[in-house]
Image (cartoon, rainbow, N blue to C red):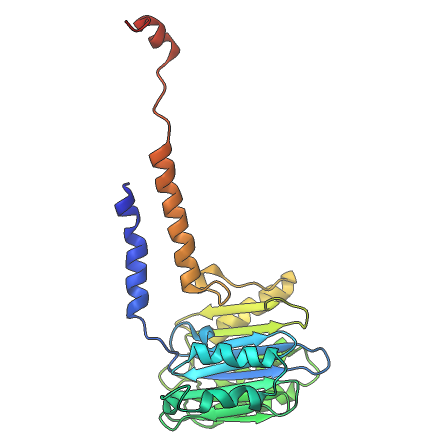
Length: 287
């Protein structure tokens, strides 16, 4: 295979990425911190792909989700502010001004930290049903939902699991939202087609629990299967087939490109085939 042909798959993938929507258009999410263990976490689901792009957890600081028309830059800025010790309200405030973002009507945010009450924002152009609210160390947010019961049940399930590990509480809350029908674009029995669960310990460089799931039959149930399987093995890691948040599409493209380039270099620099010694002796010395 020539180098030009080897590069075709990368070009095709890049073209597909360019055609993809830049936002996670609908989701329900729950984010929280545990003031006793100093864990931080986030969970969410949607009836579209790649919902995990909405979330970021900052170890020993807090968590943020950017929903509807996801603003990844704002998500990163909020997480950085949490990492510098700012409160959720102070971290969120700078991205809610027109000079920073002139499309605030299609944004939705939830932010939590260790300073108590979380902070939320919902733009008036997000699709109904939409809403968000915050409590001490926890916040929920969602849009394009079946009804307000989705977020209500998410919050109730999280509180009912008090005393359980943070990951268990977040996943139970996500399942409660799915049980209410979740994203209105999905069949109520499916509720979502992609879902994630991230939890970081205070001394983590990245989340200890970094799980994503994609399934046309129900991503939240698929996420539960992964989580339970990880608990049995005492191991939690992302599936490469689900494009984990830590690697992402661009990371996979980079790896694919490097592998293809290395293969081409090997083909170009490979030594010429050596003749058999017997044949060389038969030919004799060159004139």
